[in-house]
Length: 372
Image (cartoon, rainbow, N blue to C red; front, side):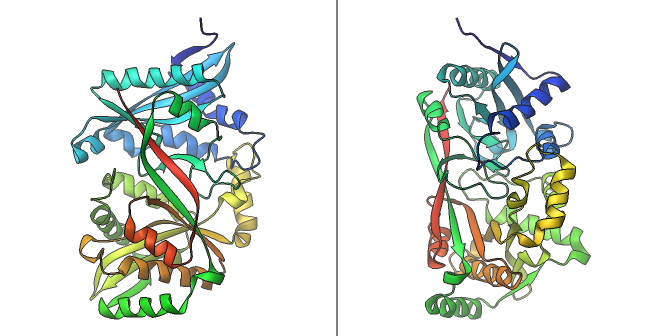
C-alpha cells in the first residue's frame, strides 16, 4: 500500500501548497530561478488567466504525512483540439520527488481526468499551453534557464519515460554571441534579402501600443498557424501577454518587419530577468522588483522569444533578416548574448538561421505523449 495520497486542489490553502512545493523542492539547486509567486498564482488562476475561458484544468497534490511530495495538472485545451481536430489532453506543472511510484500515481490521476473529458492521448509538459512555458529540459542542466523557459531536475526524464510517455517532439535553444554573429557572408546575405523583399524594420510604437498589439496578434496567428502544435491566441490571451511583457521588455527589441508598408513579421526579445531573479529565493514581489530596478543594466543576455513571418514570406529569407536586425539592436543596447528559444527540431529555416549566426545549440526540451 502506498504511503502517500493523491487529492485534487480544492481550496486556497491547497493552491498555496501547490505553489509552495517548488520553493521547497528546488531550494538546494544552484541553477534554479525562483519565479515570482504572483506570476505562479496568476498562471493557474481560472478567473485571472484568460486561457481558462476556453479550456479546463484540474490540479492534484501528492502528500505524505501532510507534506507535499508531488503535483500535476491535467489540462483540456479546447482551442487546441478544435485547431488540430484531435482529442489530445495535456499534463503540466509536474513536480515530484525522485520516486517512481509517486510520479506514476500523479500521471494516473491526470490520465483519469483526461479520459473523463473524452481525451485519447496525454501530451506534455505544457504549463498550461504551447503559448506558455513548454517542454521538459533533457540536456543543458549546467546553467540556469532564461526568462520564460522551463527548468527541472535531470531525473524527471526517467520518471516520465518509465511511465510510458514517449518523445513526441524536441525543441532547441541556441546561444549566440555578438562577437561571432556577424560574418561577411551573413552580412551580404542580409542585405540581399532586405533589398529583394523591400524589407524595413522598426521598433514597436509605444504611443500607439493598443493598435500595435492588435497588428502583432494578426501577424502572430498567421505566422505560426501551420506550426506543429500551434494554437492561435485569443484577443484576451494576447492582450494579457502584452500587458505582462510591457513591464519588462525593451521597445527597441520588439521589432516589426515591413514590406511596402505591410507588416510581414515581428520579433520579440526580452532581457533575461532571470539573471536578477535568481537570488530572490522566496519569489517575493518586492524583492524581485527591487533586484530588477537596481540591476537591470547588468543584464547582458536577451531571449529571442518570438520571431516569425507570415506564410508568403517564410521562404524569402525574411526571418533570417529579422534575426540579424534583432542582433544589431541588441548590440546597440549593450547586450552581448542572445538565446533563440525555442525552435522546433524540424523547423529547417529557423534552425538554419540560428546556425548561420554561429549559434550553438546548448539546451534541448522535449514534449512527450502517451495514448490513454
